[in-house]
Image: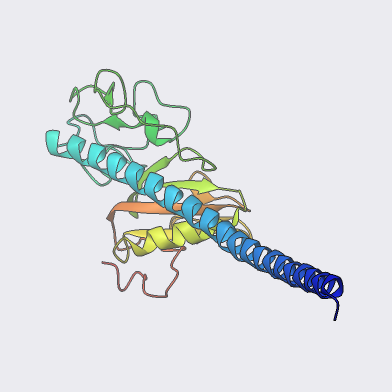
Length: 244
C-alpha cells in the first residue's frame, strides 16, 4: 500500500477512536450529573430537616428551663386569693397560669409563650413580672422558619407549650417526627390535624387550645396530670394508662 494511503487510513482510525472516547466521556458526564442531582435533592431535604430539628429543640430547652427557673425561684407560687378556672393556687401550682387569665392585672391578648408571667414575682400582687422581658434578661427568639409562635397552656391536664405549622414542605413532618423520638414517651407529641381540628385537652372547651385544621403541631409537656390526652401519639404507646 502506498505510504499516502496508509497515512490516510491511520488518520481516519484515529478520528474514529477519538470520537468514541468523546461519546464515552459525554455518557459518563451525563450519568455522573444525574447521580449528583438525586442526592443533592435528598441532601437539601436532610439539611432542612436537621435545621428545623435543631431550632425547635433549642427553643424547647430555653422555654422549659425559663419556666423551671421561675418555679424554683418561687416554689410557693402566688400567695393571693385562690379560685377556679386555672387561677393561681388551684392549677398546677407553682407553674405560671395562662397569660390571658383575667386573674392577672393586665391579661395578655393571647396565651403565647412570650407573654408568660412568673407567679410569686412580686408575690401577693397579680401584676406578675414577665419571664421573657428586658428586666429578666431573657428574650424569646422568633419561632423557627415556617412555624407559628409558641403557645402556653396550664390547665386540668397539666402544663404544656406547643407550636404549629400549616406549611406542607416535605421535610417538616419528618423533622417533627424525628424530634419526637428524641424525647421520652409522654413528654412530646406530634399532632397531625390535616384532616380537621384536633383538641389538645381532655375538657375540649371552646377556650382550650387546639391544633387547627390543616396544621401540624409539636407539643412539649412540662408536667402532666392523669387526665392528659396524647392526640399526637405516633407509636401507640402514649396513653393515659401508660403516662401517669
